[in-house]
Length: 267
Image: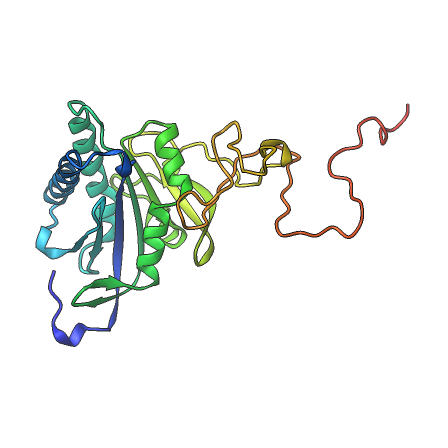
């Protein structure tokens, strides 16, 4: 997709798609070209099957992934629906014969995008990349041993996913509250071809889920309190009666939890 000089610096509302490969650091130097080739093969096949020309979109290589922007003249629903369906199907079939199955985290958001000679930028780009790199997306892909996880922004879910449509089923999405560099956001997650994932409500682990050394430990559902992805993103899935205190100083002794057997009403 080409932009002439008059477009430089002008923001245009476009669909931003961030695609990241799972566990790219675990590939050897000899394996990485094969991983990259498979990424482009599944993307190109999905674009062709969805009737979207490769030259109609802007695509940037990110080493272990791809950053894409789609102009407004192409319906967002086509990318969310048919393109994602074809992407998942191609990836699923290819992974049957791969020694190391490729896993992809895909995130989408629509917002103002600025193009220059080097690529694209803007808050919409940052949000899409943050969603794809979030710990919820990473954890979900691993926990379910899935080929693909999709994350969409709250506004994209509300405006395009929620009304539904061909290949778009809002009941197959589940929300989670996550923290990115720009602050807390709500995102909606889907495992294509599967029911809505069980994410629970993002709450925080109590001290019982923290190691004695003070390092965060994963709870029974696998969510961790940490910044492993470098974005300060943390998601929690906790049972009742869990509390979190961050950067808190207690001026006096406090009691946290229930008083067992002391406040029951006597018969």
